[in-house]
Image (cartoon, rainbow over all chains, first blue to last red; front, side, top):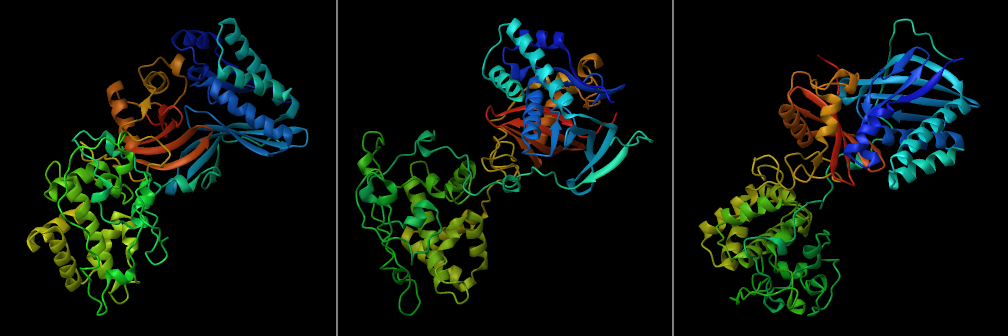
Length: 157
Length: 357
């Protein structure tokens, strides 16, 4: 069984909140861990709130059966991970895009794919979303972005 | 289901990403960002309805409707300029029995008019289509290009009406010439669909037809044939999208004719420099920026210049996520991906596609 988790730097988010009160504009580390691998790396500066929102939306599509395969993106680098749902489990593949011929991307798997139960994947995203929401609540941050994140997390419950 | 991972990497090639919106990969017709004439600073004045010649509806709207099937509405003096500009012109009026341009029937009422200032907000009922800028917007010309055309055609400040009459007359004459030209496809009114089509039509006309157009133009405008010839050549030498801006690259329509129409122009777009530097400037501590792709060897000002240039040279719209669009642009050796927020008109991040140090 693989150990899948999402990490982000709470301190970086808090310090970023001091510069901007708009959660969508917060920059900070967010990355995935699969066993001993980190994707894209163990530090990856991005827009955590925005991309977590995208991942949650895609998870909802998988959950509802609207999609079987979704592509989850990072904003600050040529990285994405694909989730393919197969009954109760998902296979996760991790890619880096690089320029190929004729504007096509070459997709390179940069760490081993893994298979985990869909429920575990969903709960991990929910847990990450709730951790972010707690930070916003503790720092009295509200607004549309926070509401949106909250509704995404709730919808997955 | 997990795969072996023997060499650390497996190569997978995928063609075009699935979420590309090819319709927006090219600028859409009529998407000019030309501001309305009311905002012009050089004192353009609206003219009174009574002074204007009848203008076909297709010319007003740019819909490309042929005169033969254009709705024939009575002219009214209502405030709606589209109604005011309804056509009373038919192909029969454009050509005589022997196929010559019928000057009498295409008379554009060229009598001199007072050009007293008119306040559009106070005198809407008298307001009609008069602005050469509005008139030519749908031709695909940017405002800067139009201004240049205005000057190079030899118009002086305050002669906007004359410029409008010139462009009207010129296109009417070309339409008429094409209408009688064997193999030209009849009415030819579609040349107004875009300036570039007009240019192509002009160059495709045989010399004898060009001479007739110039003769007609000279007659209607009260110009010498030489003046008319020069004006036509200058007018059709104007090209949208090139040389429009101060830098000679980025006019209203261009500098980048591949920028998707739904993205802000390079003049309007804003940049989240703090975020970009935090994530992709080599001077940012690795602890902060992590393993992101970096603009190696560039200082902050150079990064700014490269990203701004790449935005002007977008060559592909890759995907859309809500209000955010991922695009690619190039600046010199740098191949850059950018996320543009259409709602805020901001480039939220930009990074080199390749990881090369």
